Image (tube, rainbow, N blue to C red; front, top):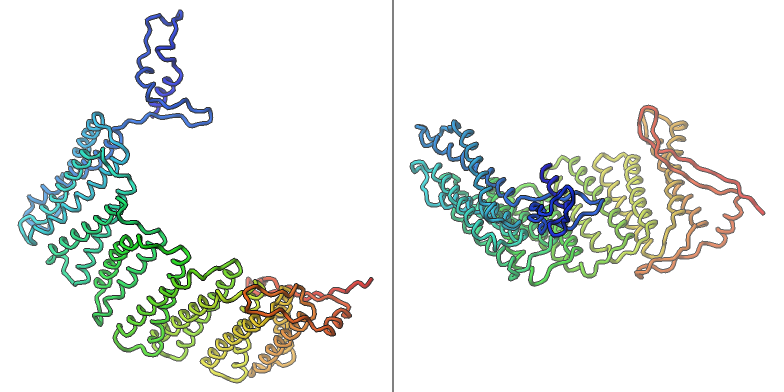
Length: 598
């Protein structure tokens, strides 16, 4: 590298023969052959800030390839010769592999330098060299496995030799045709299709339950046929006959193929083997690739449609599997897999149908995140409730899947029709939280068992969430001040009620009075916060634009007048806090500021 660098600088700084003038140090017949030889190949002089220019040797990459392939060829040849001389077919002779690899690498290096010196190869030609070598080895190996019987003398060595012969044929083809090499992108597309075809053919054998040794010829045949088929589709795509799917659409189709392919064997067998499920996934991958190329010309979904289809597929699959699982954990797997696949398809179709009418803004994204977080909590909660009733683990999973699927589908269906501000989103979620709070404490006070407590807390939370959302849909639009007052005073009331109950009602044998005090305190705080928020909303009270709400009702005039007469302002602050031992907590602070009257 350093020599090349010096030669380049010399060529850039030395005048050409045409411009040379005789001097005392330079005779008139002086010639500068080096600059003349390289001047036509040099780029324009670089700027001072540019990196120095380095000359490239065209034979370098080819020599590198020759060294790598020659080393492989020499090492494998030495191994094959050692195998042929062994009495035992299971013996693996490694003697001579290292010398053979060194000799082959040296020979390949020299051959690459020699060919590169007389036949410069383009960048696409280098790529063709690698792809043709790999394809040649693969098809040579497949032909060997297809036609050399199992147990034939030296069958393993002969198959390996067939692969090597195929790779050498691929190298020769690449060198001869490198001038017509396809662009690198097209070559990668063809290589990918060939690899997917091999995976698909291998999956056919796995799904059919073939033995990889006894049915070696079958494996090789279907792998070769599927590789050639998908490779042909890739060539049509490269020539513009077929349109390639977008990355998002292709990813969705691949996900569909693998998902449905993995579960398909359960529709035909009560207990398929892991190899059969793997085979289904491999077949699904190949189907997705072929379907993507075959259908892309008829229209491709947008990124928004792809996202909604994926969400619909996930939610529909969860609901379809969760409902039968929650009802019964016995029965053949097809009783759970069939509805899961059917509702998954229905959910994906629904996602694609609603996509053109789906237009989400920043506030809608916040509401979506909040409702999905709530759905996650409900899914975990109902799964925990099922476990507390000592049902089968699969039934508990069914409760979780049912809740997650139903909640996600409901959220996706209602979101376009809702128009909730960030303040309203916060109030809806906090309303569900307070419902869960009162449901849990109420069940404890009533002496309910753990099962009753779970149901009461989860059901009350859902009810409060829906009630708060309905109030906002009917016209109530909370402001940030109202949201802070209601929730802040509710938390403060719960803390005060707990403190009062501990001081005045403590009974180590009966925690019900303290529980009632906590519940009463939080209720009083919420009511106080609602009254103060209604008297002094701190916002415009305007509603959103989708037409589901009516204008907010103005605050009561008498209540507002009474609030103005109160001689102080009230504010609540809630900040994270931790004790000296590192236990997490919440710091609540109520500030009363005296009003100044002018």
